[in-house]
Image (tube, rainbow, N blue to C red; front, top):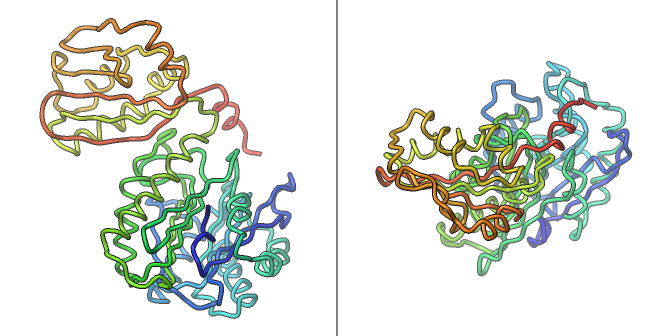
Length: 387
């Protein structure tokens, strides 16, 4: 269940020595025969852009959307490292290309970890030939594990498209804000598609998955989602491929929420009845990022007041007499006054890992969905240190 569930792709993950802990920290995903295939990428919109993002964008442009491999390291983001960082990201591609026997422009690069530290290139230079040599058809799980930073579990997915397959791996546990996050994802498929077609499909899939995920309202410097298509399954209907890619991205995004730093609740927030989709999205995001609301989720408290207040302050069309707030099927506020759901039933519901929070504004047809998490002591502990 991974990128190597797709025929024609290989992967590996090793301990190169980047992380002081000795945990796995270098991965590769590649075509099995070293042939360039159609590729697409979606990246962070943060203007504090990390070197690997700049280099990968450039390689996709120069190659016309073709790639043989993605080389990834964890433990160091190679961000805010200036010209040296760019040179190091390019060198990672060159070293990978030498080991793979391909052109450097056909190698894409991703890094994740702490910002502001130059890569230990002696360690990386020694590790790249080893990870390339280790690639195999069953190596997807190893690659997923070696991408991890504060993740507690690897994130993998396989989607059966009916005649073709989509596989994926990802990492991400915090700074997960719409327009992506501290996250990396690599997707593969054996469907045939042109690079321009893949780019459109991937961008649409990211919009309904990773871009609807927020943990703490922060956006990272390194966010990257890459998609490689080797065409071994032949052409497939555009809508079928788009649906499978969207399903894969959605599954990985939910896995990231479930494993977010310190989280105890994953909240699927659905807003309906807004004046427009844009207003629904604005209100949903404001509520999802509200620290007071997040704390109430951690406390398993279905208190509606913080939610109603956040929607009222969101700058969208709002009428306190028309909003309805419900956790699952338990209505806690409606018709301008609090409701009295069964205490035992809603208490049991709030103890679940995943909560469905439904807010209807009662004003129009606008709707939006956001996936988010609570705010716990564990998140604060994790983010109070940089090493």
